[in-house]
Length: 141
Image (cartoon, helix red, strand yellow):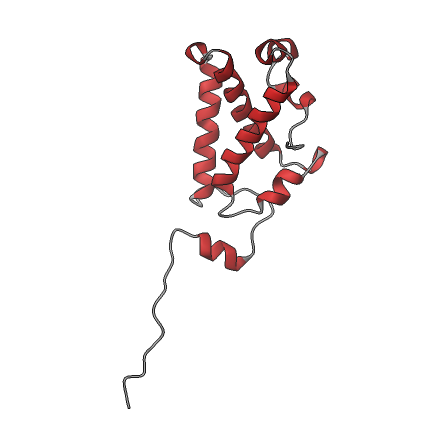
């Protein structure tokens, strides 16, 4: 269970009555969707950033963009539980926008200020471009 997203954080994205109707006031469904969203985000962010620190943050320590996209992905998953055939266009658009942003960040096309970066060695190992060679062999005897 993640403590990254608080229930009151959703007030800026969806009316509480609508969210309660979607999850039928079962908070465990919301927690499952939050965990799925964070796991999805970790897949994209872990190549560059320390995800343990990012998602352990609370209150004002949380990065606002990461929080916004985590809520958008969570709400998309919540709407999929309710009726996947009738998801509102805005939820689909915001989910797709979240994935575009995450892909851009993971490909080093988008820079995100304020997130805890991995150390240089880990970043090099996770990079899409790596140059390696075998150690030089001594052929003289």
